[in-house]
Image (cartoon, rainbow, N blue to C red; front, side, top):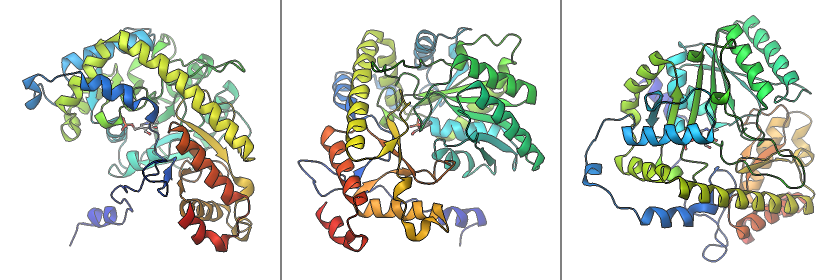
Length: 430
Ligand SMILES: Cc1ncc(COP(=O)(O)O)c(C=O)c1O
């Protein structure tokens, strides 16, 4: 017999991971997963680097506690000051580590909101925010859309403000706005003017801005058109705009460093009270001393970081261009303004199963997702990402070339009208 909340969590469909992963050489019938935002392109470099390191015996102990060693917090602060061009230098005391940004996202919801209060988000947006911010917190997420406006433009910010007011009129108490910059899943960066607009909006409403900047250094320059640059919210002078206590940044090792396995994320905030509350709760998501030692060594070695990031940008662009080429060949549309992150936002709306698309287009998207799964490809769906309209999927392109080709081949074969009744045989021969 479980508690009420225990039995509710028991109903969440969260299985152990599956091992049947496609590999051109060893498991050609395996499943191609374009779902997890992982940068597989750098794992050889990273593991070679880590394999050269040795650990101090202190790593075997609890160490300094559970909020990040001073060595790691100092190395991260220095790294951020260099790469985020922080307007007010970030101090190690403003940096708190936990076992991943996932955990810190939850802590922000816990600490900034009372039960039933809300956090505002603009869709489409990172789908797991829902799970991360709500599973344990009793916080409500208020998803809004900006219609035909571009959410990254000053016009988009005006539309967000209108949506904020509409949400309040519906009786919501909004305590924070969370953004992803660079954006997951669109791969866009917010221009400075729009960030200032968002800061002013949060100041005028008396709410917090949480800026998840986990893809900050995964921005690749396009040579076929102008590329947006990443601008951290911390590079802006807050004077006359907003109280610095209302602005919080999230960053970590999972994306820019391809090191999700380290399970290291950090909150960067000038809000002392928030930092204290976060430190109290970090007890429950403490990072490993071994992970912190590896991350500190890497961050202190900025020569390695420079080379690593340079290679990362080259490979990201290369894979993005290959993904675009394969998608075009397959006649699949996509959001073509992405210049960052590990994914491309693809448009399968023309392929929603017609038997459902008229009456319930989201159910049609779910059915298409299921059919893709049967055909051996997994992707996050527009519904999970709170897209404004059904039919969009997020395809992670940072996989091996063979995997990328095979996955898009399977999608294309499915869309090219292989009779649905033949799906089982497709599933067997993919
Ligand atoms: C926007 C965003 N925030 C946070 C995370 C999770 O980060 P971590 O691995 O540090 O928990 C992800 C992972 O996909 C992400 O896309």
